[in-house]
Structure formats: structure tokens, C-alpha cells
Length: 106
Length: 497
Image (cartoon, rainbow over all chains, first blue to last red; front, top):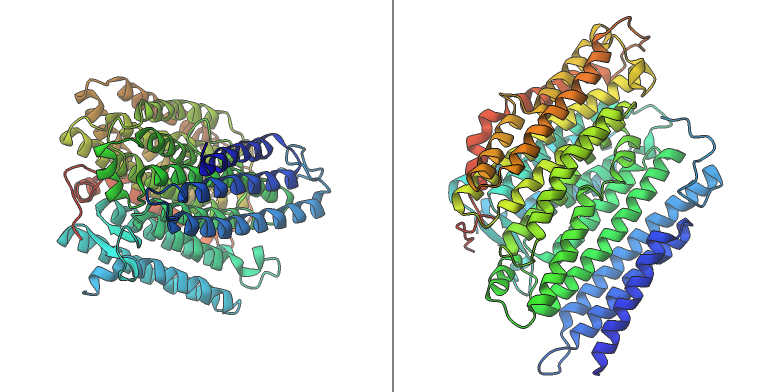
């Protein structure tokens, strides 16, 4: 088994773990972390696939995609954390499935 | 290179500059910067459509690099139509928002960040419509998503934050899934440019199954972002918890932007039948969305939830084009013209409907539909807007909704797939049911108490204008069909550099 394949399969596994966390966890922080784990899995897949070239020279395009992906993930995470913090301050809840106490219905 | 050829880049740069300017401009000026940019943008969008009609589609190489190394923007007919739709509805939303967000209100939502986020969303929507690169679609999708979540949560209360967080998590799931799809597609083809990918995929080869899985993941992500049933769970709360101008923009434009990316990928990039069963599955989900969304709209008691579920239903119509792919150029041009017509009509009618619904909500001081009795007497223009938008939702002539359903039904029947026409007809009947139910409440008396009109209400002619535009949009059908035929979405229309 070649090295890149180990990384690609490992990345796919990490992606699945993150997807599970994002969907099944109820705590907002756990969901944000789950999305980040998904991202890490994809980045591993991308870096591994960049190595799979006929002449053995690493393809730089997947690495550029990883860099862009990291930037996007950072932005999504920052937005998620600030929403979570504000939601917790307002309602004292860390779980989106519970109804907030003072929801006025509008 | 002439100035006209630079239009795709200008359409991204102008709102981006306005976004930065509104951020540094003071609270008194930012709305005028946004308004100015909205006018400039609309002029640019009209110029783009005129040039596409004049010289045909062209590719713009960003920075002069050119595909496959660089990123190309593709100015074709459908893209020009969507950019124009974003511009017209965007201009209306901007004008509406200047009255909705009071300058002297200390609690104005987000301390005026609406303008920055809104201009940024406009930037990314234009980018999403114009890009011809599969990875650039990912970036634009995320920019749309981040600004849309910020706008949806703008009120900052518990309900808006909860809806915003759900919206964000749906976006995160879609983002990561799309990225994984692009990764697999790139590893199979070593290409990201959609026009080149079409050629590579049509040739086939050893990486074919990997590419098919990648495309399936990308499509799944876009289906989640477009809120096609059963991935619509985030839409009603996010669209109804947002401030009214944002609801209008989200419902009329954002789901259209992601849908357009789907059109480019499924029809423009993927050869028919490359991913087995994909197109039929999309059509079936579309038909289910029409029925399910309409039934849900029939059951809602809150006015904005009602309008949001009607969006879920109307999105379904847009997916009837996919199972007809590969049925021949005549059928496809009819069907593609039909969905583009539907997207444009729905964008106009739904933005008008959301503005009217939000104004009704503010004036009655409640979002409970059953407490809006007698609205026809106390708020006649708003009720008229709801009724006219309803005519479009039902698809009665001469609305654009009629033209689009007629074209889609004709295309389905001519390929022998008559069952799609049944779904279209059933959707029209259900739309009549949910619109008449709401109108029955509004036309009945005795009238419920009504707050006096404030600045936003003085703009009640604006939603009426949008609804009227949608009502007579069938007369624009020849133009829409002409634009639909220019470009790579139909196999015949190749794009020359």
C-alpha cells in the first residue's frame, strides 16, 4: 500500500468522524469542532492526492486548494463561535434543540 | 480588450468596493454608498446582458492567466440573466432597506453592518453566477453563505441567532461536502475549469468512477444549499427570522445563486448520464418539493413561515429541467428557458411578497395570519401585492409563472415524461389553495387593529411594483429564451475565448 493511499483513506475516515459530530452532537461547540474535523479530513485527502502524479513530483494545485479551504474554515468557525457565544449570553443555552426560555414567538 | 469585455470583472469589483466603503463610511452615509452602488451595478448588469445578446458569450481570464492555471469568468446568456435578476431585485431590496433601517434608531440592527454584509453578498452572488471554475464556485458559495448567515442573524435576538446557527451548520456541512467532491473530481481529472472538465469527462477514462462520486458529492452539497426537499429544514426558520429586506434577498436571490451553480455543474459540466440516476433523482425530489412545500405552506399560521414554505415549493419547479437533459436540443432549450423564466419570475414575485408580508407583520404588530383580518380594507396596497404575487405562484396567465410552467410541461410531454407535467399542475392547484386561504383571511372582516404607517410602509408601492413585474413577465419570455440559448449550458452553444 502506497503512502498516499494511507493518508487518503485516513482523511476519509476523519471526514466521516467530523460529519458524525456535526450531525449528531447537540452542543454548539461540538458541532463547530465537528466541522473543523471534517475540514482536516478533506485537507489530508487533498494533500495525499497531490502526491499521486505520474512523475512523482507533487502537484501544487491541491495545496493551494487546502490553503483556501483553511481560510474559509477559519471564517466559518469564527462566525460559528461568535454566534454561539452571543446565543449563550442571551439564553444560557448551548444546545439549539432546546427552546430558548424567552422566545416571544416573532 | 474593450471595456465591454471587462464587465464580468467589474460586476464583482463594484459591489466589493462598495462593501468596503460602507464599512468605513459613517452611519449617515453608508446607505447612500450602497444605493449608489446598487444603481451602478444594475447599469453594469444591463450592459452585460446587452453585450451577451450582441456578441454572444465570452470568457474573461482573471489577471490574464487563463484556464487551467488561472480562473475564467464565463459571461453567457443564463449568467447574464441571473446577474440581471440579482441587480433588479437587489436594487429594490436596497431601496426598501433605506426605509426599513432607520438611521436615527439607536437599536438599528447590527449597527449598520447590514449595508456591508449586503454589498458583500451581492459581490459573491455575482461571482457565483459568473465563475467558470469548479473550485471558485466553492469559494463564492462560502462567501454567499457567510454573508447570508450574518444577515439572517442580524436581529441578534435568541430566535434569529438560533436560526442563524442552524443555517450556518447546514452551510458548513454543504461546504465540506462540496470541497470533498472537488477534491475527488480534481484527483480524477487534474482539472477544475468546467468547460474543460466537460470535454475530459465526455472522453471517459480510468478515473471515471472517482469523478462521478465527486460530482455526486458536489451536487448533494448544492442541493442542501438550495434547500431542495428533504434538505430544506434550515430554510423556513432562517428566512423568516431575518429582517424583512434580508428575507426578501435570501428567498429571492441566495437560493437562486446556488441553484445556478447546480445548473452549471449538472447541465454545463457533466455529460448526460455520467452519474447514473442523478438527473432523475433531482427531478423526483423537485416534484416532491412542489407537493410537500405547498402542503406545509397551507398549514402555516405565521405569515413569514408561510412565505418561506412557498419558496420551498417553488424551488421544486426549478429541478424539473434535470431529468429532461439529453433529450435533444429543442426540448432542452424549451425546458432551460422555462426554468430560467421561473427563477426570474419567482425572484421578482417572492421579493415583493416577502416585503409585503414583513410590512403587514410590522403594521399588525404580529406575525399571526389569523390576526390579519380585514387587511384588504386597512392595508389595500399590501393585500393587492400578496394577491398579485399569488397569481404568479399559481402560474396563471399572464404571469411569468404561467410561461415557465407551460414551457416545462410542453418539454416534459414532448419527451413522453408526462408525469412531470402532473406535478406541475398539482403544484399550481396547491399554490391556489394556500394563496386563497391567506387572501380569505385578509379579505374578511371585521378589521383587526393596525399600527400607523411609518417610513417602510410608505414604500408599499415598491413590493407592488415587483409583483406587477412578475405578473407581466411572460412578455419577457422571448428575451429569456434567447438568453438561455447563448452559452455552454445547451450543448450546441460553445464558448469561444
